Image (cartoon, rainbow, N blue to C red; front, side, top):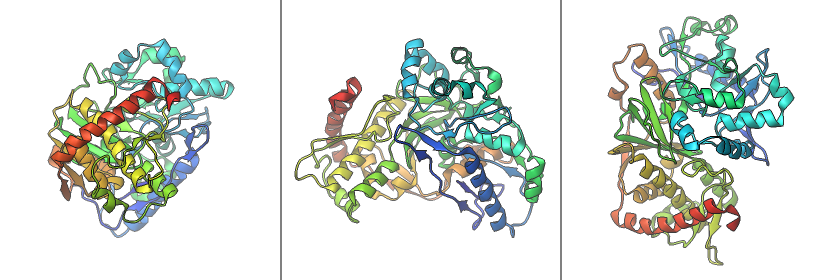
Length: 476
């Protein structure tokens, strides 16, 4: 959780940033939960610290813009108390419900309408699972919210969400900008249980308790949270149909934002959401990114010079095929029962071989997303961001070589918060167009054409193993 102060031109005020690290708790059965009240207390603590650090900054704080992770779900009772933890996108306990949804609906039709495939990361499967596992408790639910909506309820006393957050639930018609009636009917879900969709420029004020706690914010206008993925792309300076943002943090994503309506036909491996009523965001997501690197570093005790050794190697020299699905699969197959696998192990395989194969495998998954994105967008420029790719020159080069495209590596540390600020400033007329505000320092990563040709052969080996997984995961 992070926060800081920005000026009216979306420039960060030095010395005001606060960051608290909090992760979802995981369970052996696939759960990924965050305690809602603890999460809220952490947000309050972060705001306390920002106000303390910015005490010497002159002038009032007039507006508060926020971003929050997509796809979370928390059920609250009729007294607004949490009945469940906050279920994150990585919570896979509802994967059995995906099969039920696929049998009931034409998935392609729903995908083109909601922008989301049937998958445990989205609300329909989670809601079905909650209703089946906890029927009595779930029957007493007073509302179903994203974590950002829960924050709005606690701070403003309003059950309200943004189009951006709603469009990432899998329960929202991205063309009509309203909750999807057909899925609500199947789930026997009253629309009154869902948060209200906020009007485009609507802002809110703190309730009495928090206005008293934070006097500097009592007159500030708070905008409903936008999704972190959209905010990250905006903050990285990618807001045109010809520009793609590539993010490698704990997970990974590749996205394109453009002004205009969603496409009527969305490639099977991609999702498509809304930034707001005027902008669309389309892309693909990987469940394993920097989290996979961290897992390997923890369990393999990698040598400190692993990156340098990989940079000196030829593509595929490890002779391994790595399927990077330790956290399951989203893009591009949305295979609920996917698991990670390594093929080709020999007695001479070492830890650097495994790391090299894993980094290439993630790059191959990005290449598949990129291929599908190019069907709907003419991508001329790629901007990469995220700590995992910034801190590994070897991985950045592998991704450029696998894609066969140069890209710019954005050095900005807070793309998401900057993106939320830019969108808020545009909505109130303080800046004319977010396209005029590019991100800061960048360095170029240049693709190696010879390695690109070699990687095309390696990708074929990866694709064969991937298809084997999709056809029958018990074969691996």
